[in-house]
Image 1 (tube, rainbow, N blue to C red):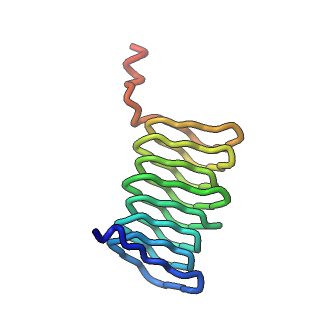
Image 2 (cartoon, helix red, strand yellow):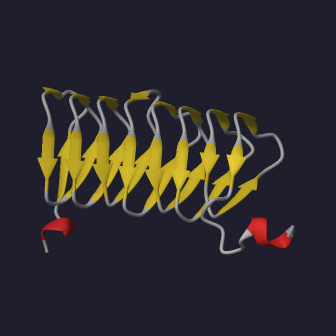
Length: 149
């Protein structure tokens, strides 16, 4: 199974151009370009470009670009993302400037700062989190409009 392979971009490596892998990818170095990863993507280095993967973890100081995931998106404490996020579940501890669209549940932890709108099936906002935007639940299993007829 190719998705179990892990390619590591070392701290000293700088790649300019798009990157595609059938396996998982751990970025400790720098990439200037879009990333298409069929496996799991972990970013603790520097990325300027859009990222697509089956699962995404971002723990870097700044990622400039949008993130699209078929599964979980986790933004670690201290991480900063300038771009939109799309996924099926989310856990946010860092800062995001962009809209978040999660098909399933999302947890906004107490250290999170979000400047953008959030759409999900359920949203948990822990005390101390800062959100400058609208929260909506378009994917919730309850038809809210039917409650008020």
